[in-house]
Length: 397
Ligand SMILES: *Cc1c(COP(=O)(O)O)cnc(C)c1O
Image 1 (spheres, protein in one colour):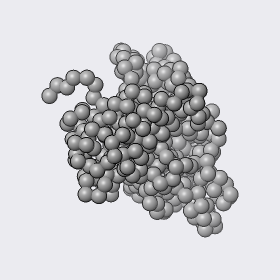
Image 2 (cartoon, helix red, strand yellow):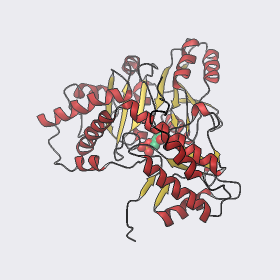
Image 3 (cartoon, helix red, strand yellow):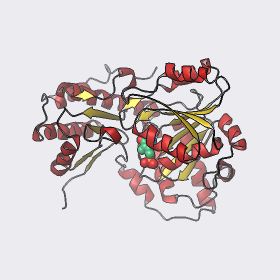
Image 4 (cartoon, rainbow, N blue to C red):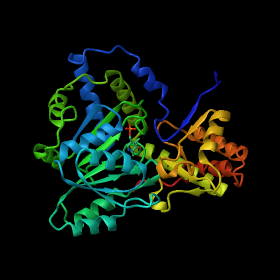
């Protein structure tokens, strides 16, 4: 069935790809060993660094985010190494615990409730208990996309430092990079993993690793088998703007355009925009009288909000109704949250009126699905969004 107007893609990734980025992809696929490619390669590799807030190396794989997770592990670890993975939700399980286990790593999975971020106290205790330093890496999902909870990476790094533990710190920022403040260098992260299709506003298909000096040193002695994911030939070729194999050339055109857009808007303004949209969405949910999954306001996600439907009301029935009536896709409940939770994505290329439309679709859907709620969530969000710019609080310290 043909539908008039735009589809609302309000899942927390893939996100709405701006027209500018789509148009940028519409160019000839060039010789990836030729001089024009080298210019493109250098430009995107250089342009990515400020997004990770790093001065170090960033590599780009033609891969989904999960591929970049695997790359982080195989480059830094050896068979049988212990890895401490903090449970935050579905992605700490599927992207990390499952991957690490299949690779032959020994996984310690620190339990979590899915309603809070990784606990710095728990991390510190576990590392202090590991007196002989058998844990080689700690893995944390920065923004847990299944729950809308952000782990406080600066505090987790402090916990590692105060335990004086040398494990590598590997962070998954697939749904936070380019939407929520994230500092690879300042937080002494060793490998930052991300993907193209969320905050970076690109179609799916690229995966990234930002690599610290310490991670690079670890890769020299790590013995897990690696070929395609090996950083060494990648970094060697990248130095002159090339790749060891055929890169996703047209996605790199898209990336050059997306990086230009991010630079024009300014990273701090992008974070502020996501903060406003997170605040407004949460104001709507509270006005509806529904429950936000995230329990700790310090850990609210500004890229998505996960919301419980009341007992006895299936969240997927609501989602299906909203898709059918209003042509809007919302995120489903993942893993044990299936049917209990729906997620509103408010990240990437997104503005106030798109959010107002999104929340209107949710409110109409709640009414049509007969889900008990208090009308007026949209109005509460509009109140939040229409605070004069001069009175709006800056989010950055
Ligand atoms: C989306 C996502 C992934 C997986 O990325 P794919 O591109 O689907 O492989 C991993 N971790 C987090 C936190 C994500 O949001």
